[in-house]
Amino acid sequence: MQQQSLVEYGSRRVIVTITAIICALLEIVDTTIVNVALPNMSGNLGATYAEVGWVVTAYAIGNVIIVPMTSWLSQQFGRRNYFAASIVIFTICSFLCGNATGIWELVAFRFFQGVGGGALLVTSQTIITESYPPEKRGMAQAIYGMGVIVGPTLGPPIGGYITDHASWPYIFYINIPLGIIATYLTLTYVRSPKYGEKSHVNDVDWAGILFLILTVGSLQYVLEKGQENDWFSNEAIRIFTGLAFVGLICFLWRELSFRNPIVELRVLKNGNLRVGTGLSFVLGFGLYGSTFIIPLYTQTLLGWTATQSGLLLIPATITTAFMMPIIGRLLQKGVSQPLLVAIGMALFCIYSFWGYRILTPDTGKEAFFWMLIVRGLGMGLLFIPITTLSLSSLKGKQIGQGAAFTGMMRQLGGSFGVAVITLMLDRRNQEHRNDLVSLLRVDDPAVNDRVHMLQAGFMAHGKDATTALNMAYKALDYTVTRQANVLSYMDGFLYLGILFTLCIPFVLLVRQKKGAMVKPPEGAH
Image (cartoon, rainbow, N blue to C red; front, side):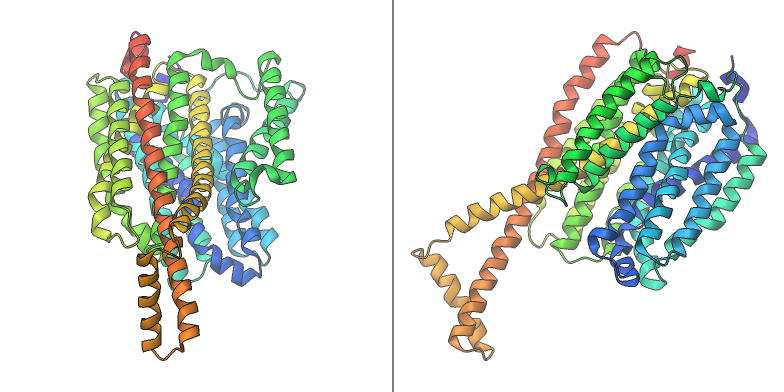
């Protein structure tokens, strides 16, 4: 079998695995590492916060455009060559990002860095999968999963530390030595499969490429900028939503009718991949959504620094890394992937409802510890079985095509998660504030007593009665705003918990219907 010839053994497999993990980490850490440095970039480059937000958006758009094309590009140029070229593009653009002197120059380099980085994550998964024999694919996905799960968590504390102790360009410069090492190891040790002839220029699906860029680029823009621009009240959001819809229809028609499509949609006939693709979207929603909501809460309400917020997630990340090989061994022994996914979702539900219960305006650090440990356990049980299930009955070039689908859906799920949570927090915050304000009646003795107590406190510090009264009303308004924020974050955890609760029966139902297909990886070969 073709994929068997790519299996590595001994030290060579170790080196190939390390190379792939370095590249996966490079790509995914850079997704979140810049978030904490945006204020510094804004001040240094003289950009508004809306402008500097494009540093994140451009990278995400570059990522999500290239991911579906990685399998086709690997076939055209050879996987090793394409992988090495992607590392080089990522590394060079990292240097250019650090040397950018203007905001739009930085945004342009971040886009091309995202184009190079998008290939790293998906191709790393394909390389690791094909470097292990079929009976050890579960362990291979466990090793790959360490990079994907650890990466988003490492970004904020690393970025915060570098920004605090050096300057923001160094968050890009640290990629350069790792990129050089990864390029050398790739060219020396990674092998390319032979999956057939390359496409001639006349056979290249140029229209499919155009429709793909139009669809995912427009969709990613809407998700990234929707909340900032008040969604569909903004003309640009409406235009890009329309472009995404039209582009999707044209893309589907083109890929299903063209003889040599840029994205092979027919691979989705595989039942395991269809289920895994849907679950990858839910995984991305939960992974990036929960990684987004906790630092936001701790920084905006508790006043923590970005570094402190990032470090809070480290124990949970270590727990997930510890779980990876255990889950890999369970899969090798034939434990059902859907069963493990259902258990992981149940743990994620516990984490979410736990978060709903403990949030207050002054929740202490210790209250988060065990809740986040449960999240770490759940993520371990979700990621490996989902990725293993997705690729379990694929072979040859289908593995790369399947990895591209799951990678794209995980990325889009994360974008949807952040967009939906941001929208929900904003809307629910306003609703809670209105509800709380309606309870503050001027004829309520408790309200009057609270105002008078605050006024007396300010007067005790030398303020006159009128100034003290105004300050008392402002303090009460601040308390209401703070409490409304807490309630909106509680809703965020509650809705995440409900989402995963609703998914559990679906996963178990899939197991019953697809029981003949859901096997350990070796059963598919």
